[in-house]
Amino acid sequence: MSLYGTMGADRRVLELANVWRSRFGTGGEDTVDYLTAMIRFARKEYREASVLFEKSGTAAVDSVQGQRAMYNAAAAAFLGGDKVRYQKCLQQLAAPQIREEDEDAASNPEGPASGHPVKDEMDAAGRDAASQLLLEKALHLAAKHDPTAEAALQDFLREHPTHPRAVEAHLALAELCLLDIPVRAKAASLALDVAKEIPGLADGWKEKIDYTRVWLYEAAEDFPALTKVGIQYLETWRTSQRRDQVRMKVAQAYYRMDDFTNAGTQFEELVEEQTESPYAEVAQFYAGKAALAMLTPAGMEKAISLWEEVVNRNGSLGREAQRQQALAKRRQGNEVDALLVVNSLLTSKPAPAGDELFALLIEKGELGMLLAKKDPKHLDEAKEVFTYITQDTTATRAWRGQAGYLLAQCQLLAGRSAEALEACNDVVESCLNPTISRALTPQEYVWLYRAGFAAMEVLKGRHEWEAAARLADRLASAGGDRSESAKLEGTRIRLEHFIWDK
Image (cartoon, rainbow, N blue to C red):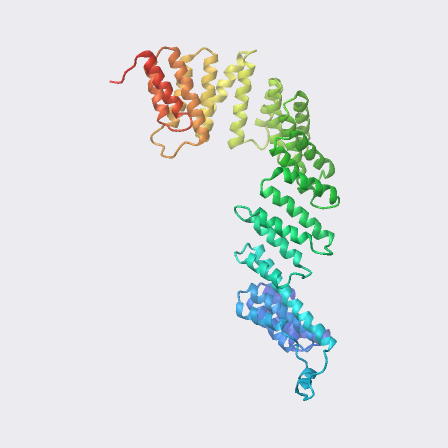
């Protein structure tokens, strides 16, 4: 039946439903309707399924089966957008069950008989099914982030405050508050507090509440509180499957508070405790960043070692870990080894491209400039790298601007002020090109002003005061953080060297 239902062979589904009824079932057409409705529901034909479920529930001889069918009819009606049928089925579930003997008793002039335990149980089951349906509706709306979800959850809690599943409603309310922009941390915390006080709460729900509270403080960016509740969670729920997530959040909170010692400890403990966790590679990578951030020789060595372990994982962060190793070796003053790492990355497979490629080339050029202090041949290699970037049309204007500025620095180191001035002017002209209508990005502004001020220094060194003043005016008119500094520099040059506009 399931296979034929998926194929849309409705006639074959009905044939098999009748076979099933004749061999295994005790019901009549209500059973056929129920089974067919299940197939319709599985195919997300909710309106058709709702009609069939309701028909089955109305015709059912067995009251339990009737309630089950009516519950499913209401659920299907809700998912199918049939609000009228949904309310109708909900009312039938919540209404008291009428039995034949009850009708006889009602017509007896001596009055109705005393309460019937089976009937009372059926009525209670119906009311429970109705309340369950209200909760499922509210949770479904919450899962879709529907604007009416919060009101639906609050309505359920108001009508059924002691329901066995009330904790689910409180948690859903808290999560909705955390997903709001801005986050409603106070309301979320209140919902979690109420949920935690529910008597006889199972450990699974207590753990979920504690986990959501960690998420609460992360969303509110209250990092001291996050580390506190996170550590408590790790101590309380030692077998939780979410330990790696929580430890990652705690480690990140320490890192964002610049507490690199505790951050590194938490990152490393995550790797040691759950080496196969999907967070392990990221944790190991940031353990290296935390070690490097301590700015000690031991920290640098530890960072390089941790990143080597990341490389050995052959994961997505392997190449970035190698790049970080190169930066750490450069910081150690070990430019030769750093250059070896960079060259290895440039020749690796797949070949680096885009921002990764240009970042590596810039690093290679800068290492060449440092090595040129001992061996001048490296300066020519650095100039070749920077020239290549400035001429690469696939490079962004920011990358070309950075390369142009660094090329100018290479020319200055070689004593070629004219070539340095030319490289700086190329950057300025590229950034201030009138044919480009879009505004400069923050990074483009950085290299515009670095190249522009470097060019001014060259012009002042050559006593070309008027050219330096005009360049200052152009930079001042470009906008950006340093435009005022450029304006003041232009004024100073004019006053000191008696340059007057005609």
